[in-house]
Image 1 (cartoon, rainbow, N blue to C red):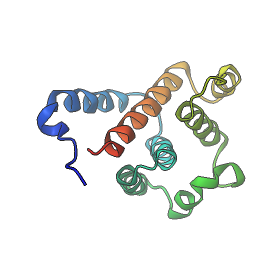
Image 2: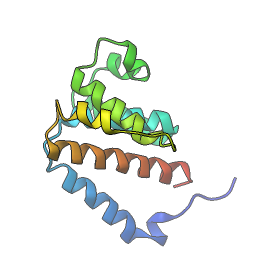
Image 3: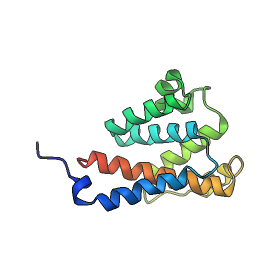
Length: 141
Protein backbone atom coordinates (compact mmCIF):
# COMPACT_ATOMS: atom_id res chain seq x y z
CA UNK A 1 0.00 0.00 0.00
CA UNK A 2 1.34 3.45 -0.85
CA UNK A 3 1.20 6.51 1.35
CA UNK A 4 -1.91 8.65 1.45
CA UNK A 5 -2.01 11.89 -0.50
CA UNK A 6 -0.68 14.59 1.82
CA UNK A 7 -3.23 17.30 1.11
CA UNK A 8 -2.48 18.96 4.48
CA UNK A 9 1.11 19.67 3.46
CA UNK A 10 0.83 19.81 -0.32
CA UNK A 11 -2.34 21.92 -0.62
CA UNK A 12 -3.27 23.30 2.80
CA UNK A 13 -4.72 26.45 1.26
CA UNK A 14 -7.16 24.38 -0.77
CA UNK A 15 -8.34 22.48 2.31
CA UNK A 16 -8.76 25.77 4.16
CA UNK A 17 -10.90 27.20 1.37
CA UNK A 18 -13.02 24.06 1.21
CA UNK A 19 -13.57 24.17 4.97
CA UNK A 20 -14.52 27.82 4.59
CA UNK A 21 -17.40 26.83 2.33
CA UNK A 22 -18.90 24.91 5.25
CA UNK A 23 -18.55 27.91 7.54
CA UNK A 24 -20.66 29.88 5.06
CA UNK A 25 -23.13 27.01 4.52
CA UNK A 26 -23.81 26.96 8.26
CA UNK A 27 -25.27 30.46 7.85
CA UNK A 28 -28.07 29.19 5.59
CA UNK A 29 -31.52 28.11 6.83
CA UNK A 30 -31.11 24.35 6.87
CA UNK A 31 -31.66 21.97 9.76
CA UNK A 32 -28.30 20.51 10.82
CA UNK A 33 -29.85 17.11 11.47
CA UNK A 34 -31.16 17.03 7.90
CA UNK A 35 -27.75 17.95 6.53
CA UNK A 36 -26.10 15.20 8.57
CA UNK A 37 -28.61 12.68 7.15
CA UNK A 38 -27.74 13.84 3.64
CA UNK A 39 -24.00 13.69 4.37
CA UNK A 40 -24.36 10.20 5.80
CA UNK A 41 -26.43 8.91 2.87
CA UNK A 42 -24.07 10.28 0.23
CA UNK A 43 -21.10 8.88 2.14
CA UNK A 44 -22.79 5.46 2.20
CA UNK A 45 -23.30 5.59 -1.56
CA UNK A 46 -19.70 6.65 -2.15
CA UNK A 47 -18.30 4.08 0.28
CA UNK A 48 -16.35 6.59 2.34
CA UNK A 49 -15.79 4.82 5.66
CA UNK A 50 -14.16 7.86 7.28
CA UNK A 51 -17.07 10.15 6.36
CA UNK A 52 -19.70 7.56 7.38
CA UNK A 53 -18.16 7.35 10.83
CA UNK A 54 -17.83 11.12 11.14
CA UNK A 55 -21.42 11.83 10.08
CA UNK A 56 -22.94 9.14 12.28
CA UNK A 57 -21.29 10.85 15.25
CA UNK A 58 -22.15 14.36 14.06
CA UNK A 59 -25.76 13.36 13.43
CA UNK A 60 -26.08 11.92 16.90
CA UNK A 61 -24.68 15.17 18.33
CA UNK A 62 -27.49 16.95 16.46
CA UNK A 63 -30.06 14.64 18.04
CA UNK A 64 -30.31 11.99 15.34
CA UNK A 65 -31.32 8.52 16.49
CA UNK A 66 -29.38 5.33 15.89
CA UNK A 67 -32.55 3.71 14.52
CA UNK A 68 -32.95 6.32 11.77
CA UNK A 69 -29.26 6.13 10.93
CA UNK A 70 -29.45 2.33 10.63
CA UNK A 71 -32.52 2.55 8.39
CA UNK A 72 -31.15 5.37 6.25
CA UNK A 73 -29.94 2.94 3.60
CA UNK A 74 -33.59 1.92 3.11
CA UNK A 75 -35.15 5.36 3.68
CA UNK A 76 -37.56 4.93 0.74
CA UNK A 77 -39.17 2.00 2.59
CA UNK A 78 -39.28 3.55 6.04
CA UNK A 79 -41.89 5.71 7.69
CA UNK A 80 -39.25 7.29 9.95
CA UNK A 81 -38.38 10.09 7.52
CA UNK A 82 -40.40 13.24 6.88
CA UNK A 83 -41.45 14.39 3.44
CA UNK A 84 -38.76 17.09 3.52
CA UNK A 85 -36.12 14.54 4.48
CA UNK A 86 -37.26 12.14 1.76
CA UNK A 87 -37.10 14.85 -0.88
CA UNK A 88 -33.64 15.95 0.31
CA UNK A 89 -32.38 12.36 0.31
CA UNK A 90 -33.81 11.77 -3.16
CA UNK A 91 -32.07 14.94 -4.37
CA UNK A 92 -28.81 13.85 -2.73
CA UNK A 93 -28.96 10.46 -4.44
CA UNK A 94 -29.82 12.03 -7.80
CA UNK A 95 -26.86 14.41 -7.60
CA UNK A 96 -24.53 11.64 -6.46
CA UNK A 97 -25.55 9.21 -9.24
CA UNK A 98 -25.12 11.56 -12.19
CA UNK A 99 -25.55 10.04 -15.61
CA UNK A 100 -26.37 11.08 -19.15
CA UNK A 101 -30.06 10.36 -18.56
CA UNK A 102 -30.25 12.60 -15.50
CA UNK A 103 -33.24 14.93 -15.60
CA UNK A 104 -33.96 16.87 -12.45
CA UNK A 105 -36.77 19.31 -13.24
CA UNK A 106 -39.46 17.16 -11.57
CA UNK A 107 -37.31 16.72 -8.48
CA UNK A 108 -36.63 20.46 -8.26
CA UNK A 109 -40.34 21.20 -8.49
CA UNK A 110 -41.08 18.86 -5.56
CA UNK A 111 -38.18 20.27 -3.53
CA UNK A 112 -39.58 23.77 -3.97
CA UNK A 113 -42.75 22.71 -2.16
CA UNK A 114 -40.80 22.19 1.08
CA UNK A 115 -37.64 24.31 0.69
CA UNK A 116 -37.16 28.01 -0.03
CA UNK A 117 -34.99 28.90 -3.02
CA UNK A 118 -32.18 29.86 -0.65
CA UNK A 119 -32.44 26.60 1.29
CA UNK A 120 -32.56 24.59 -1.96
CA UNK A 121 -29.40 26.32 -3.19
CA UNK A 122 -27.64 25.62 0.11
CA UNK A 123 -28.84 22.00 0.15
CA UNK A 124 -27.45 21.50 -3.35
CA UNK A 125 -24.07 22.98 -2.41
CA UNK A 126 -23.99 20.78 0.72
CA UNK A 127 -24.57 17.72 -1.47
CA UNK A 128 -21.81 18.79 -3.85
CA UNK A 129 -19.42 19.38 -0.93
CA UNK A 130 -19.96 15.99 0.69
CA UNK A 131 -19.40 14.34 -2.67
CA UNK A 132 -16.15 16.29 -2.95
CA UNK A 133 -15.00 15.32 0.57
CA UNK A 134 -15.92 11.67 -0.08
CA UNK A 135 -13.78 11.67 -3.20
CA UNK A 136 -10.83 13.22 -1.37
CA UNK A 137 -11.00 10.65 1.42
CA UNK A 138 -11.56 7.71 -0.91
CA UNK A 139 -8.57 8.85 -3.01
CA UNK A 140 -6.27 8.35 -0.06
CA UNK A 141 -6.51 11.48 2.06
